Every structure is written in structure tokens, then in C-alpha cells.
Image (cartoon, rainbow, N blue to C red; front, top):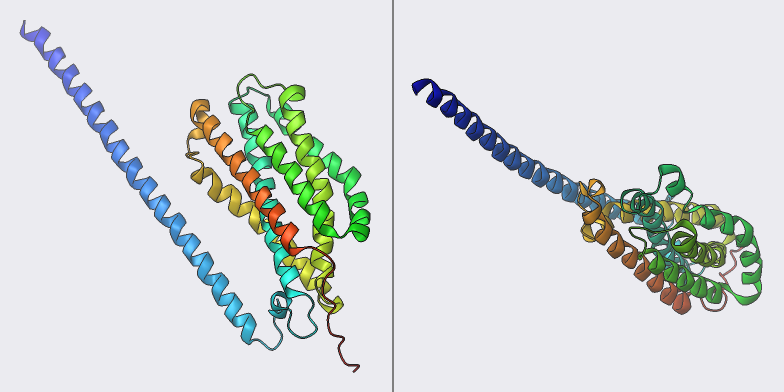
Length: 286
């Protein structure tokens, strides 16, 4: 009898130790998540502070890397209001595009059950359509101005992202993925080239290189920031890619946010990119 009780006691002790260890891991995991969250907020605050410091230094510099008059339009720098507006629209476009390219591939593999190769081809229609149609849209914008094409294109792309938000279990490449990505591709084909032209037309010729660099940097930063921030806002946790039931609803919210960004970009384009840029005052001859 005593020998029977001893193994039972030892088994109970081991079970209690396992439960205690699991509880400790849970507490440690909570602490790690808290530290990671605090580090993320700290890094974000540091980035904002660095951006503000950069703007202040550029305002006081005699030879700024990014001339502030590009945004204010003072002197002969160009149409500052139009330049600023086009870059704000750029933020909306590339934030939405970053979300689509990153999250759609994960959704198709984790939730819809696609192979990595097939999921990787999902956004191919966007690239192909932009290669085929962007140059034509740029030429058309020289006659119509950028506002109609950018506004209409972004609304079309927003409709595509709303279609993408419905992709879930059992989705088919031709029936569900292709219609969504084709709409996004058509919309971006109409909008991107005229938007880039609007940025460059708003700056004086002597600032063309800087204007292009600023716009490219803003586009890249917008995509990265959206991929970093929007999944958390949409409720996609760090372990969500391993849990289809958790990732799917977050994906739907993220695509809806992306569609909203494109709709806001369309409204801004209609308001800020109408007509032609204000002609800069000619610089006196040297």
C-alpha cells in the first residue's frame, strides 16, 4: 500500500511542477510582450522625434537636403500646396499597396490553403497591368490633368481591396483572387504614373531630382509603416499566422483599412490635384 501511494505522490508532484512551470512561462511571455510593446512604442517615439529634428535642421540650413520651400511653395520652388497634396496621396496609395502585397500572400497560404508558389502569383496581375498600362495613363494625364485619373484609379483599386477582403477558406485563384487583384492593378495603372507626374510638375525644374527622391522615400516609408502598424490595429497578433481562425478576421479588417486609405487618397486627389500646377516665378538670370 505504501509503495502504491509513493508513485502517486511523485506523479502529483510532477504534475504540480508542470503546471507551475506553465504558469511561469505564461507570466514570462506576458512580460516579454509588454517589453516588446514598450520597445515598439519607444522606437516609434524616437522616429517621430528624429523626423521633427530633421525638419528643424533643414529649415535652418543654408543648403538643405530637402528644401522646405518644396512644401511651402515660397520663392521659385514651385507649387507647394500641390506638391504636399501629391505626397500625401502617395502615402495612402503605397500604404494600401504594402498591406495587400504582404498580407494577401499570408492569407492565401494560412487560411485558403494555397501553396507558397501559387500564393506568390496572386499579385502578379497587379505588376503585369501596371507594366502594360502605366505609360498610357501617363500620356493621357498630359491632356486631362492628373486629378481624374488618380481619383478614378484609386476608387477602382479600393473596390479591388474590398473584394480581396472576402478571400477566405475555399477561395479560388480565378474566381476570388484574380478579380480582386485585377481591379487593384487597373486602378493603380491609372493612378500611379499621373501621381508621379503631379509630384514632379509641382516642383521647379531645379528641384526635380530632390522632388523625385522625396516622393520615392515617402512611398517606401508608407508601405513599411502600414505593414508594421495596421496588422496590430486590425487585431492580427504575432502568433496569428499559425492560427487561421485568428488571422482571417484580422486580414478582412486590414484590407478594409487599405480600401479606406485609397478612398481618402482619391478624395484628396480630387481636391488638391485639379488643373495645372501654379507656375513658379522665374529665377533672375545669373
